[in-house]
Image (cartoon, rainbow, N blue to C red; front, side, top):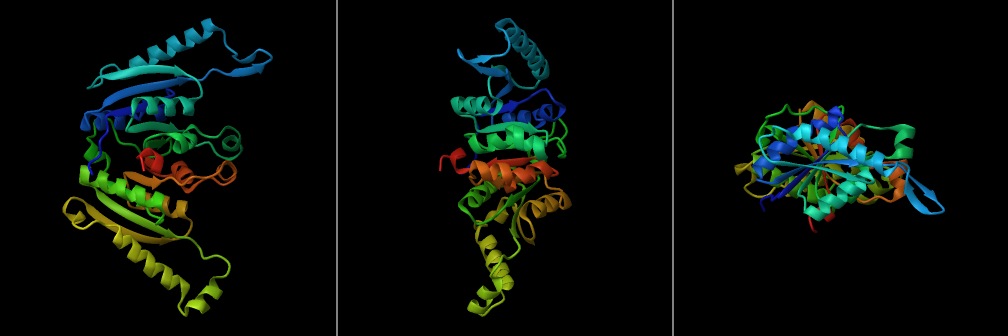
Length: 305
C-alpha cells in the first residue's frame, strides 16, 4: 500500500537541532502534497495550591512569551517554498504535540532530542521518548549528534539507505512493512537487520535437548525469518538486503548504521511499563541517543492496527 500523508507537523524549541527538522519537513510535505505545520509548545510552570493548579506566570507575562514565540516561529518559516502554518500552543510539550497530531490527523511528526542521559533523563525524561509512546502517528526523531541532510535535498536523497531493525515481533514486522513502503516510495536501499542477543542461562540444557548447537540453530532460523520478510518482486522497486548481527541490539544497530552510512533507522516501538522505561529504556530510546542518522519510530497505534 502506498504511504499517504496529509499533514506534517514540525516541532521546534528554537534550538539548532530542532530547526534542522525543516530540511525533512519541507521536502516530505512537498512530496506527499501535505499541509505543513510548524509548532512551538510554550511550557509555563504550574503550581498546585489550595485554589487548584495555577500557572506561575501572570497572564500578561504568558501573552508576552506567546507573542515572542509566535514572532520567532514566523521568521523561521518565512520564505519557505510552500505554505506553512506557524502555531504556538501552551502546555506539556509532549502531550500538546500528541494532541495536535491527533486533532489534525497528522501522518508524520518531526521532533528533535538533545540527548539527555543519566540522572537528568531519569528525573526529567525526554520529550521524544514520551512522544514515541503516545504519538498517534510515525515520529521522526533528530538527535543533536546525528548527521542531518542539508536544506534543499529531495526525499529520494534523504532516504537512499534505510535500516529496519527486525526482532520478528509484531512491532518489528510493522516497521518492516513501513520500511518497504518507504523504500518503494523513494526507490531506496533497504537493510533488514536482526541482532542476536547473547544467550542466557540454560543455553547448554537447551542444546542437549535439541541435539544441535543452539547458536547455529538461532542463526539459521534468523536468516530464514529475514528472507521471509522480503516481499516477492521487491527487487523490482527497491534494493533489499539482510544482515545478521550478534551483541546488544542498540549497540549493533547504531554501529551498523554508522558503518554503512544509513540515512534513516526505522524501528517498531514495543510498549514498556513506566518502571522499565525509567530504569532501562527501550532499544528505540537508546538507538535515538546514539544513532548517526535520524530515527523513525512506528507503533501499532500509529497505523490503525
